[in-house]
Length: 432
Ligand code: AFD
Ligand code: MN
Ligand code: MN
Image (cartoon, rainbow, N blue to C red; front, side, top):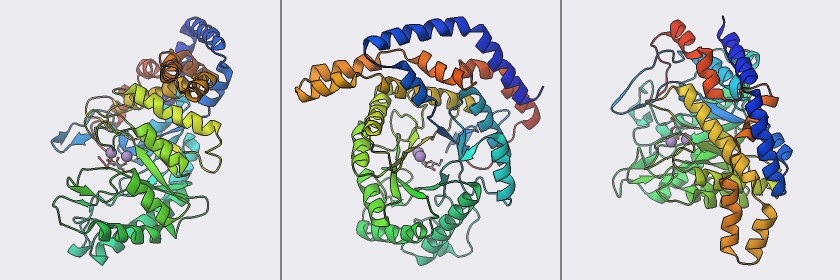
């Protein structure tokens, strides 16, 4: 049996076996929400439109600087990565998009890849440049990214970084992408190593050259991160720097919020609100973190924070703030221990649950509490929603689109990993 047939069979079997239990759960939540004046159909309809991109680098086991433990059946090339995303999409009906990383996913045949994507029902989401690794070492040492890419004091390195990004945009265009995501490792480890203002100037100047080549309808996302690999200062270190860069580039430059790229206890939901206010929220990299850029599974550590972030999105949507540009939702994680596909399924589920919970907030009650300066009332409105088990809404959205009621158990039931392990063995693709 083909892997596709295995998945279809498992999804179907599960839908049959768990239909009665699911219907009872859905009826229960529908009644409960009706008491809050919330229409479950609106939530199901909204959920079924959410699309969460899978990063190509999440499909193999991640590593650390202490090592990498390859798992059986990891994709060996870009086509197998697309096949894994198509498998995930079959299960969830919420992940029909892949985010590529160049040069890890470099192809000499963009036309062929585009056709394979279309055949697999997957679209090409925001595409990522990589100026944090030299890859093939450049002949000219002044062109190395060792001391930075777009912010480097050496013209050769900056020119190389700009060329690379312009090439990534061209490839992305050929593949149907509409955004370039730029995460920079540029920074310093030693006070005085470079001029903060000089580095910002050079970054803006270099990125302007990339921005100037953006095709119609494209955005450029700037992704901030406070530290690592640079431990004293990063050039694009927080949302303020990210916003400065975006505003200096032009209206199609927007900020991307990676949940793991904040110092402990940062109020990420407020950062999201500020970027919405400025019309500069480009998108997200979802993950979770305990200490720093841990790339832990979305919603596994701070589910309430995820809910509050989604609440900002629901609010912004209600206010029409996303009319010009809706944020791109992407996962950004890679793991040492878990099956990578199972992790994507869990992250996706966590986002859908948080989004659904955010939509169950009694908005009138919250508005009144705010207008009356009633913080306890505001907390009641939020936590009443957060404590609601909305999983039946998420399942119903998936059921109506032909997906699995429970993606992880359907994935396990299908034997997909064992089947691809047999074919692919213990190899790994380029990338992390
Ligand atoms: C980095 C950033 C960024 C980058 C990725 C590569 O999160 O999104 O593209 O890791 O693995 O930490
Ligand atoms: Mn990221
Ligand atoms: Mn990261």
